[in-house]
Image 1 (spheres, rainbow, N blue to C red):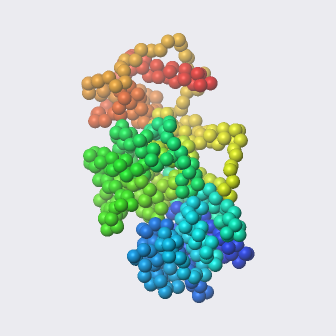
Image 2 (cartoon, rainbow, N blue to C red):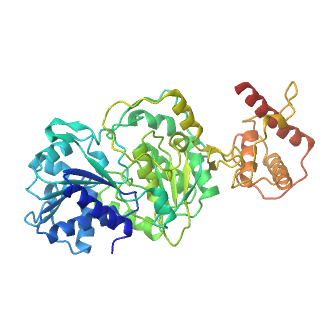
Image 3 (tube, one colour):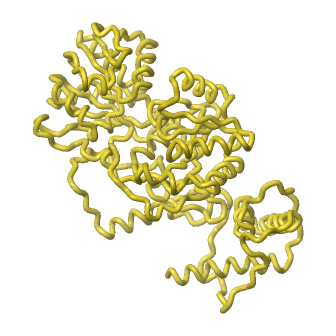
Amino acid sequence: MLRPYQANAVQNSRVALAGGKSRIIICSPTGSGKTEIGMALVKGARAKQKRVAFLANRVHLVEQTSRRFTKSKIAHGIIQGENTRNVYEPVLVASIQTVARRGMPDVDLLIIDEAHGVAGSSDYRKVIAAAKCPVIGLSATPYARGLGKHYDELGGPLFEQMVVAATIPELIADGFLVDCDVYAPSEPDMTGIKQSRNAFGEMDYSDADVGRAVDKPELVGDIVTHWFRLAKGTPTVCFASNIAHSRHIVERFNAAGVPAEHIDCYTPEEERQAILRRIESGETLVISNVGILAEGWDFPACRTLILARPTRSLIRYIQMAGRVLRPHESKDRALILDHSGTVTRLGFPTDEFPLELDDGSPKKQQGGQQKEAKEQLPKACSSCSYMKPAKVHKCPVCGFEPKKQSDVEVQEGDLVLVAKRGKKAQKADKQSFYSQLLAVAASRGYQDGWVSHKYREYFGVWPVGLVRMTAEPTQETLDYLKHLQIRHAKGVRRAG
């Protein structure tokens, strides 16, 4: 039984085709059941004795679709390299790479999965141009540049119309997806990292360069530290910058006693399935990859996402975030730990995004619009790193409320620091300072995030292995905290 929005998408697609459109794309967010929509379209075509081809862009998506079709009792053949079989069937599940080489059999309807990749693929465009039948694309992220671009060989736009099944906010409101909490504890320095157009036509960081910005011991260690603080024990998927980075993250988790595994496109199919079974059974807690799990991986119980791969690609970002937005009895909300700076660049993954086909022409944004867009982006709480909407002043998690400049009396000169960052300190000194911070936090109503960050500013490391006990703060400690407040106020004044 289709959900209401799925049924509407199928019906609206039929109306569009009946109205003379030849190529349409259905927008349905990750976790909304795009395959269910696709199967409904297949069954509808078969009820009219039509032959259908379903195209996918990855081998594991061909296999996954075949399993879903078999479960739904849709008899089908496969066109995919050496696995090709039963090509006489009225429904074919095919790999675009194989079809581009061998040619597409005559069909009455062509359905393309993950259709946001069509605009940047000459193989897809060649197959579509040769097809003498209607084409329906399925995508959770139809934001790719050129999806609505005019092509002479097609006699019109690549896709002529978008049919919107539902938006992410609508699905959250109706309980078909869960909302998320986002923390941004750290982000790499991306200065000097080159950008180039990706397969979707978006400007994004170069895959060749991004690894050197993020694959550093201190950043990898920060990922593990914050997972323990915010997500300990939860099923987690991590997206890394490259294979080496992913393996390093897994090594640090394993060294900390957390069962973690890496998976990539070179992982043998049998081993890949075993890894996925272990994460689903709970035997493994963290699964790390570069991008292979961004499309087609369904594990609703996965609660936590670690973004360790900086990106400017809205498509890549939403695909990754969608892995944890599926509802499950074990979670009310998802958790995203952003160590990439992506949320501050692109916003929350649950925001409303423009739903219109890009015609490939250059987009010019006025300075005022750019400024307004930037001001609307979420910001991290300076105390606990929780990402809050730009206009929210008081952190809804830790209660920290930044002081306005007028609330702080700024005097000439700075207070003398009682310790210098990086200075070797005895554990007794660390415990003493930590206990004093706990006492200050309790008296002022601050949360644990404030304590951790002030401790790190003082010693240059996070508080680990310390006893949670309070102690009366010394005047030196209070002076140090006042120094930080004055320094912040001066920074605000200089920025103004």
